[in-house]
Image (cartoon, rainbow, N blue to C red; front, side):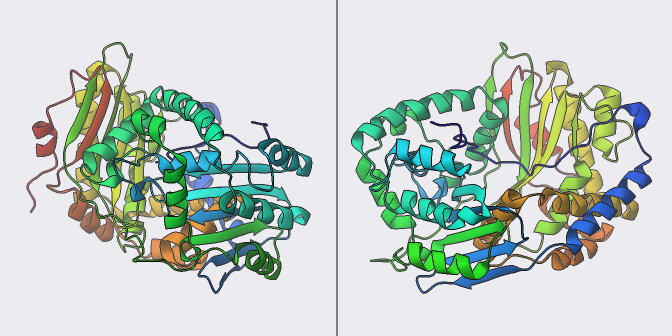
Length: 483
């Protein structure tokens, strides 16, 4: 595929990604100075954020945009359909369908599509997650009508030729090999399988090999006709975009997207969190890759923001960072001083009605026990002894990272599309800031106690994990005497 049709793909997006500052230790600014400069920059971003306008068409499709007057724009379709709407038989269909969108339509061959995108100087991309499928294009603002028309064409008029389907099986199987060589992807797939066993949220996004080899045109067509509906779709855009123009384009190109169902609309499949583990012992790997998580909450739950602050308190660390003992995260300080791991990443992964809050770590075999122990000690600290100064620092870091992440039309467009699907609106920055500011140390202690104390964790581990404590021992570390 031409380079202008950007890559296929990020299949997971499991973690909240933050930009981490790397500096030499000799040039580190004092913590207070860094936070002051970052906060100033974040406030400047907040002052220049335009209004997000949202309009709902007659067929239920929502049109949302933010016009920042740039010469470029990003426009995309966020569809409430991912692997969670599959079962064991058709698992992998949503991701397979995403691949087929670039193989040609009734109007354009694959070559025509690639040349048209390249001649525009544009980029076309897509990804599938557990709850959403996304197709988006980045182009010059003057080419917005052409970009919207292309998006409409690929999701409504894909040919789904049998020959293309057969060729794409090999592409997806090669992609699966790449995923299986990425230990972080493997561990998070295992973590979902462990946490949500016997439910579709525990399935992988790509699906098993036998499904990839057996998916047929009828399976893809049924998925489109079942899930690609107006009320479950958001057309989002950011950059140099006039909202009225976007509405007109949406009506013209998506007005025929069905807004109703022949029968009952498909309900979100229920899931049930299970404290359990999956271990894959492999001494051929040099390092152990381990994730441990408790069940958290969905996007719209009021405890989501406190858990995000708690996630920021735990933080991230990598041995390649020059900082460590000087970082605000206590776990990072201990990891650096005690040589506990090569890296760790805290995560707070949200879905509609549930979530996973935990830590992913990469360790030497002989440091696994200590890393698990200190991780649980830090979790207990969040529940019992976190201070106001620590919480205030984490709140500032969270606000800054959120604001500075919205740099460019693509992340803004993604933020709009995701929030409209998850919340039904885009939360204004001042409201989000107020909700973060309202959190105190008492809030963190109460909320973390609710989700951590005496709760069964889900665990996934791959590699030389002979020193990983037994599940019941780790489970006992989730309990402490409460005064």
